[in-house]
Length: 502
Image (cartoon, rainbow, N blue to C red; front, side, top):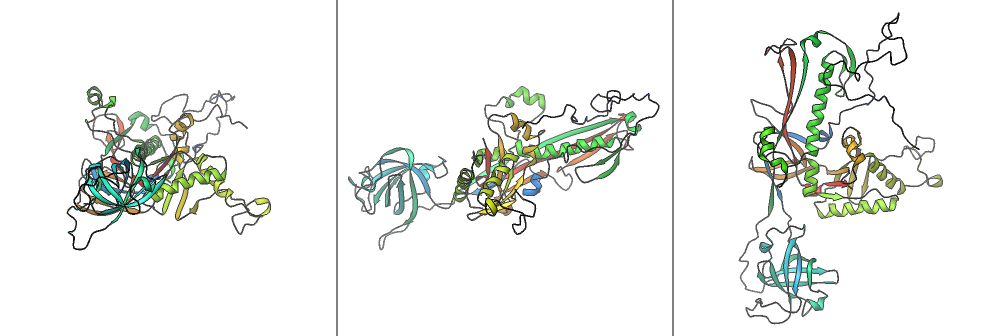
């Protein structure tokens, strides 16, 4: 089966009223006698909505909130992990390499030595200040064996351990490694009677993130002559308005397009890379942008700090379920937020429907009937809006931005790599420390910050200039409608977000 598009599909509306071949009805070309015929045709004044709801805005309002800010940037801090768990290499499996044991004497045999290389998330920051201390008890594990051990020496990133049940690490099945194939978990400590306590404190670790707002602008203009030539159009707008408009119909489309730009920028925006040509002084001078421009959108934040998953595109329910369980494993590793929202393109949404249907086959011939009491006389419902797997609840919704041919759906249609098929967004709120306000606040994981004060609100600002329409501000024989927004997206706890991409 093949699908062929019509040859006369409507094009994108022109932002200005102009006599172009794309924005008027040519009756001569339609096989009639033209406008010079004896009886004029019955001209329908109602605009046909052939593309349905064309706007894609509304995604962020569903999953987050909007808050005002007064500064040029927003800074927030996120908690680090509570427990000490690391990736390590094993330097010695038979000796403590000259470290001191608990009695203060140099140990020449037994035990072993490990070097901390990364934290459990793969970061190499401050491995020398890893927080492991003498008298800590640790669990050491490799693919070939594991053991509990006592830390008897610490020198920067290198720790010396004495296994509890073995003479050496080698006896416990631990082998020499140069890769990060060894895990070290601190699970407690052990001290002798009457001994002094700790001499080193571990301070809580947190990470600080920042983002800055960008200024978005747009503009609509109509001359005084065109404004005086009234042509009524009956419309039903994407925002729910209906009725008759004349030249402001085009202004309404421009406003709707700008509202989409405001949201699309929060999804797609990226910060310039260090070696990017966009930071060239000539380009900065030509565009009028400051040296530090750009902002981090949702997709960039997940790419940088979240999880990228290539899957849920298998041909069988078993394959898809196994792929989905891999996502659950990541959730277990990072916060385990119980409720999550899935915003998916059509192919991925249907793949999940097929996966759930495969897990839910019953009735005559293995068919699931109906939406009420599984009656075969009811309408067959082949879609699922939510489900529970393990201890997690998932709510599924189509993401129009990923389906619409004129937005990301058109990009995905031709891209051979980095196609975005959907995002998993945690529901609820997180507690973070706001450095601007100096206190802990609970905010949605995903929210927009816009510039505003008592004198100026730049969330979605519009104003009219010119000399047409009763608002005389200049001698320009036109009405100029200006749009502006200054905002950025805050993605808190991006380690709980998943983007489906291939």
